[in-house]
Image (cartoon, rainbow, N blue to C red):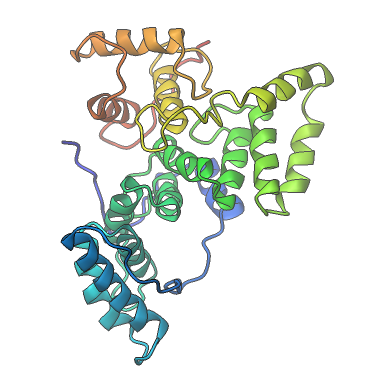
Length: 312
């Protein structure tokens, strides 16, 4: 099992572009625990009902709903619910530790709870966790892995994540720079309610050569890779995960084709070759073991991203 490497200090080994995507593209919203509508549990097994009841108790304390508002007291039922797998409770604990509301701030513990929620498909947790991996907040800085998580949130329609994907594609943060894809992501962010995406999208468009617009139009129509609806959101074959694999393989000197999130024949052959060269079962499967191996190879023990000569 891979060591997650959570820690309670911020990394200083963060590139300018990695920091910029956080500061410029994805503002952290507020510094208090978010108030959430309290709704009753809708059935389920005993553990699920118990977790939901504990979560609702914590929410009432956060919201001051019929009781005195008490963030510190809310953490006990929220933690109990989180330990039972309640994703929203895990997310709220992550935010509490991130901002120091009701508990001493601890970036490493915040990242741990956010990762649990993110793995459960919690969109806001995926977005926040992606931010943490980009700048090294409570975890080792791994921008490409961070963009995988932000990509998952973007695929779920999170406006800030869509915006971040546009910036990342434009500036080459955690994936190669590609203005065509950047324009598409900014358009999606614009449609999702980020008005500031409009001027940036237009600026990106001004730098796309006239003869290249046919590719943009084709990608919009086909939804190639970046918006592949045929992939399960929680699958290791989803577009954000495939993009990470393609990017890592390119950085490590392999030739998987373009970083588009599509596991086509060329990408599959390259995965099989990498697995063979690294004593993994010789097939083209994307597995947790493959992802761990790629992360270790890409960032190494010192956390510095491998940057070999450009490949095609």
